[in-house]
Length: 303
Image (cartoon, rainbow, N blue to C red):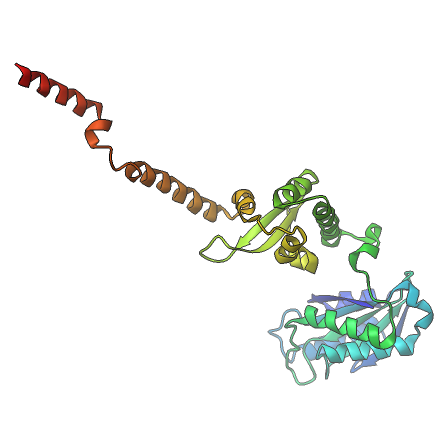
């Protein structure tokens, strides 16, 4: 079982999608189920208890591996979903769970109000980390097949940002397999239309994170997949002595202001070096006018 977390502003659009053809309501709490319209009205009525919360729509998709098909029924899926919500501290609020039968893998849509029954906001802090941990624990508890990550995702069904993320993921993972260091990785993914950009710790040249750019869209590496964080990639490349090599490739990928500061620093460094690196050289040795004047004075003395 895996989970996809989405937040939004419109209950109407979310409910309308969930109740499309080949759908089945398996659980409801605090909502009238006469129609999609009444469900939406009830969600919106409660959200007015906290009108300042813009993204009040909580939407989670729980999906199971096709190998779990024979283990699943409405009761098992509902039990797992309730335990999942409890582990994410989502409680005391309106909730709708809908099972879809339109794909090979079984999945349910959980729609809940982030404004709870008491008018308080349901926190989304560290939600994705909690979700990952919850899925892992529930897979072990129910004997569900543990997801093998992005390798089994059907790329043909992806669109928009999701498609771009998976394209970056595939490119970078292949690049890591074919590269011995950061420079080789940079060249490999650039040839395939992906750029990388490093994030620096404020006021220093210490690399703190990495983002990837494709089709003018930028995504943090860790947001694409945990294995694409700077630390994980650096570990995979086994770059024990790559600090110099890394510095050589980061210059063109830092922010514009950082690049200007670095260039100014280098220029001042060259000037300072030129002035002070040879203290034995006197001014007259460098200035031809002084040399000429000195020569004339020497001629005068000889007379």
